[in-house]
Image (cartoon, rainbow, N blue to C red; front, side, top):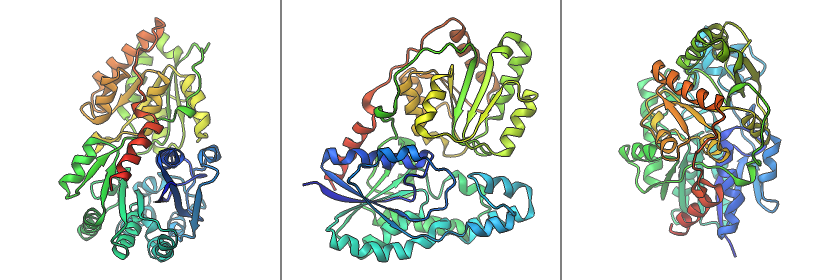
Length: 429
């Protein structure tokens, strides 16, 4: 009989985006390794990305507990005058309007650790009885939002005999997002205090990269383990030949002020000026949520839309067709103080597809190490235009010559194998 594990997560299908997939895939494969996942998630979350295609990955017999949540995003909508909010708009508004700046200050200084904090107390009261009646001895919380970890903290304080794994998909007190929220010194201290309490009370801290592991340890975390993101072999389509004669540079995902490699766009624009053949071949394919500032900048340096293909968010199962139609896949890593540990699931899906990668980010970080070790493509620092140009020219020359990628994908990053590693960790608690 499988042992039960309660997974507390804000993101769950039909939520879309990268944040949902880590624990959706773990939950999909955990039963194969002796664990029965029970999911706890909001009944009415306020997210704008929905992806119905991810519903197919939910095991048919899994128990999903949904509990109402109140989120104060209506306050920002009133301040900004917007009827709808899309991810990244809060930061965009905070740069341009008085009410946007006010909303950023309110978000950063009154809603600590985040606007989902109001879900903590009622969730703890509800789950306390669930743990007892279902004889659940192991719980997992995953953040961001990091308020989810406060549910785990309070549950373990009430039930010291349970084991609690706190999973960090992003840093907390050193998260680059916080640098944009106009935090007071008091607010900074509150984040560090809450984070420290989670470190002290949790049984195990889990994160996605070695750099972030070391960062958490430097902040006082004990028993820190790494399980990276990965790819699900079930998602990867069979490779196909494409007759497209365009040098299509594809990025799928969010681009905003934290992830906007201005030097890359400028280098691509310069190359179109220098080489008419490159200009006629180039297509920049951007799929997903794009902030207004990013699209305006790209159009400005490229001189319009001639080389641009802009598409909104598409379902995860559909995005692979965009990848297959591309000559090179863009991996845009945050240009921030903790960017060295950024290892998005997208990197591993690129690996499984075997398409050449052009990464813009820390050339000494965890992503760079994997790209180099498995010969996945090129990586350049976002502030090194000369290196970016060299990387693009190298990939473009190979594409023109019909060179096939010689990357070395590995099943080490297959979601099923990563779940086996998670199961071993849970068995040892």
